[in-house]
Image 1 (cartoon, rainbow, N blue to C red):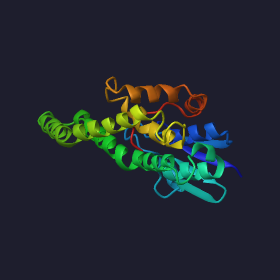
Image 2 (image 1 turned 180 degrees about the vertical axis):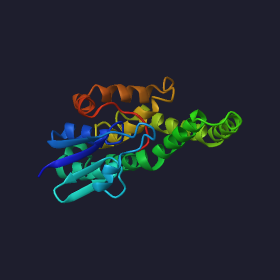
Image 3 (image 1 turned 120 degrees about the vertical axis):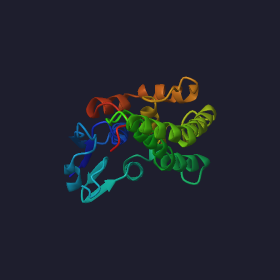
Image 4 (image 1 turned 90 degrees about the vertical axis):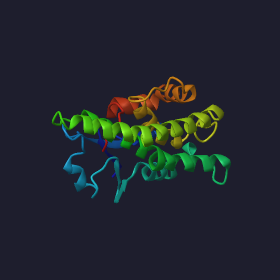
Length: 223
C-alpha cells in the first residue's frame, strides 16, 4: 500500500503535495471540500485522524498529521537531498524555519484573518461599530506590529540567503511557502523584494506547478 494524501482544498496540505512532487514519490490523492459557510474541513476527515485537520498522510499503518511532522517523515524516508547534512549551520537553519512557519508565523496570520473576518461578519447596525472598533484596536496594538516584525525578520534572512537553509533549496522552503503565499492575499509585499523574489522562484518550480494542478490554489482559509 502506497502513500495516501488526504488533501483539503486551499489548505496547508499543498505543501505535502509539492514535496511529494519534488521527490517524485507516487501517491494517491483524496480531496475534500470546505464547508461553504464556515470554511472548515468536513467531518469525514475525523474518520482518518481524530482532529479532522489537513494535511493527513497515510503510509501503510502509519497515520501522520501536522505539516512539519509529515515533511520531516517524508524527507527522512524518501528525500534526504532536500535536507542539509546533520550537524551543519544549514541544518540548524533548516530546523528553525521548519518549525518557525507554524509555531511563530502562522498564529499571527490566523489572528489577522479572524479579526478581519470579524469586521466583515453580519451583525446588527448598532453592533457593527463596536466590532470594527475592537478589531482595529487589536490590529493596532498586536497584529500589525507583529506582522511587520515577522516579515522584516524573514526579509532580512532572505537578503543574506538564497533559500531558507542557505544556498540549497530544501523542504524548509516548502514549509515556509504556505504562510508567505497566503500573506500575499492580504499584505503588501512590494517593499520586501527578497520575499517577493523567493515567491517568484518557488512558483517557477515544475513540482510546485504540478502540485497546484492536482491540488488547486493556495490561500489562507483556516482549517
